[in-house]
Length: 370
Image 1 (cartoon, one colour):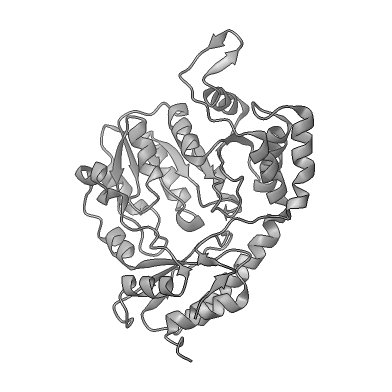
Image 2 (cartoon, one colour; image 1 turned 60 degrees about the vertical axis):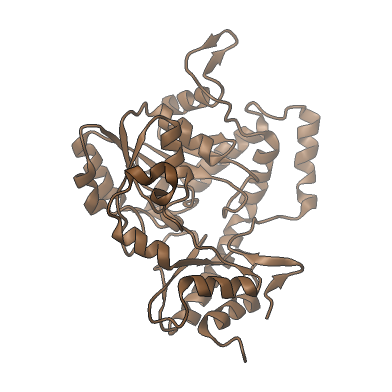
């Protein structure tokens, strides 16, 4: 049984690609304006559109999410140690090392798979200056408790919100929590600009500072006041983002239907646990945990899916703390280690057709011989 789109294997995520002809007017306007980057009209339009759609005060667009993370860390002027999760994409911790900061890994919650807020205080030392939780798979962290801990200890809070586009928590955007939040608009994300990212902040003064940092620290033609970087999003990516935003609500609705079908179809499969969804989520990932009572190991199921051209991912495996540059910083992380050994993320995206989802369910349920 092959689950394929023409000649391509079924991936965990795929970019939403609107009709090409709809992109032509944007390209023509860029050509006519003769402005390819440096805060052009589409860049400004996308920042405003995202503020309105996401329900946030300030958006600063970036060339990618990692540069946005690095800039956010510089904007917060952090030193010393930053408490974070080992269960994330490696860019989370890499941004800390690049910034001369020490990641301190704390274990994750077994239900949400986010940084376990009950363990944070035990990891705080006199060198701790910030918390950097991740809204893993777009599931909101315990933002209220994290903020209470940060306030009590005088710490900054920077959220890696790479997965959290359009996610709500406590009656509003999850991006409104913490000092700053960072989004990724990489091509695999539910909303993408080919490559891109953004920092979400709460006031114009902070945005102006961030905008200066992403433009080499330039204030005007003869003034540079900070050691910035070239992090600006180009006009073509911004235009693509404006077009993507028109299609995002429909795409999310389709992904929600796939999420529901997976949960229904896998509910009675012995040894398979679907990680609980979150109200207000964006349905960008569908992680399952392969337990000891399932007939195959996690890796055997992973290979079975790949043999049928279903390119699911063991996401996140291995833990960040298992990579060579972080091993000396690793601590006892029993929950994260257990989850990393069990997790598989199944394909979920708006163009995944229902019969493909049914075949994936059948493969996992052991019904692929019928």
